[in-house]
Image (tube, rainbow, N blue to C red; front, side, top):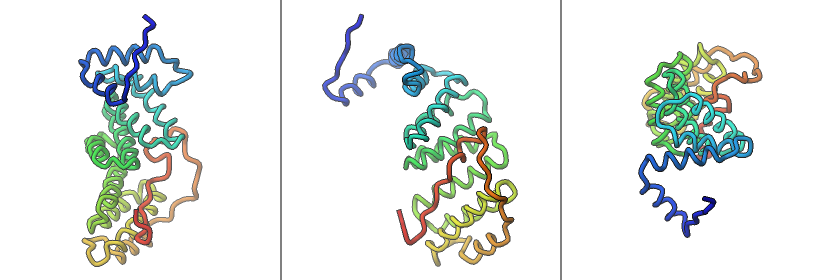
Length: 237
């Protein structure tokens, strides 16, 4: 009682943790969550609670989502992505789980974890999603395709996403048309559908978005912040 264990190296600590049985790790996380003051370190407490939980639990998932919001406000995209991914896995309601998986996919993409983003995107795409959320799945898939290889398929994927978004979110549709235009310029003659002229004509025909308004506090975390922008060809990542 009151004793403290110190590891000589973080890798030793990690090896000991991984070698321990799952039940022991759960008990340790539960004890750490119980010992952590939620007012002083709510995010650490949320993570330990999540690691101690195996079955779906909305209370724990909601706590993780709040931790993700705080992490995003600090600029901790990787931490936010981890919180959201775990929250999605612990969400009992299928629609809410799909929404959180979409938020986690977007955060993983921003953090550079493409494989994890695609896996979460597939989970989100299984739904159920409303039409706008479904269109955002297509948009994120197109953005990931562009960021992976700047290939000839990205302009067409972005163009299709923009067209789906037109009746649902005119502002986001216009931004997506701009992304499709940059992608088409980059692909040049290699583009397979969604060339510069086609994208430009579609953008000109699109409805003009309404004047910008303050985002709703209740809006989804997925698009509460600005969408990842596609880099113009003159400034490749």
